[in-house]
Image 1 (cartoon, one colour):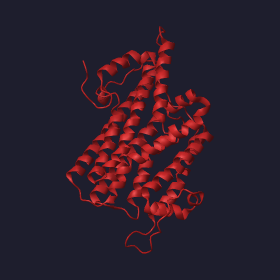
Image 2: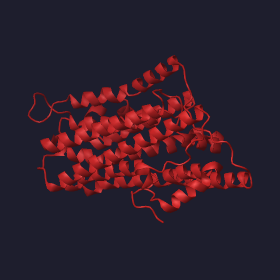
Image 3: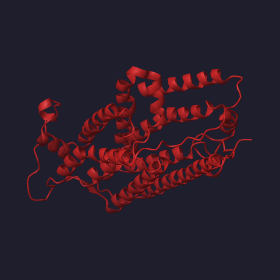
Image 4: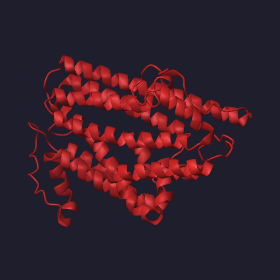
Length: 368
């Protein structure tokens, strides 16, 4: 709620401020957003940082998954005391026992310390929150691997195979989208929303960013991956609901992939036009974008909601709450994105008409 309030306040101030500043002024020359170039060494350093920050979680996760499961040689570790004392938090034995017997709590605590705290510290050193962006494509995959290879895991063969394959394809699609958008660079820039929030909140942003950038995304990432825990803790047989979930999940991914490709082509074409001194296209209003203002968001939401159907099928409907939280967070994200378009005088009128005629998320026929 704090983050939503911050984003909505930013959106209001941005729109009102720009409307006031540009009232009666002529439209400025259109500038296409370009990715800043960083040196090869900076790119390599950021890549190494991205690898290094994952090592603690990878190490402890692999150690938990190496413990003996039922019927295997060796004894399982004893139950841990759920006490967040300094002695426990600094004890590898306590982490191993926690990971073995309490996987969900283990994932949350590991995400808090390894993502929220460590990524935040790195951001204070580097002065940018870029690191969380590429990890959006990787953290769900790492969580899925932990649940799948956990010593106590059990799953229907086909459900486990289908879900694992779909998630890997999702991660590959989003990783490709990130690398294309950043022109195959790591850390060249951070998400523009965080840049704007940093400018607005000034000196308090370093503290506020811990909650707005990391803690809220921790909840989102752990929340949307809850159905994966259900999949790998039940060997219930495949049913028609699983089939529906698989088809819809694949459809969501296909929609996102198509929308990403169309947006990437649109941006590349505008860069070419600008380089050649030609007028740029102000609004992407073709392909899937003709029927939805945010088809990439719709595809992403469809993917996670469909994945949640697996949890419903396995008797864990409460896990849909994680997906619901993710969808609620997309409301201010959508508002901020559209506010940015409306704040550009050369695009404002066209975008208002686009808003009037085109569905926000769900692809639908144009209004007349």
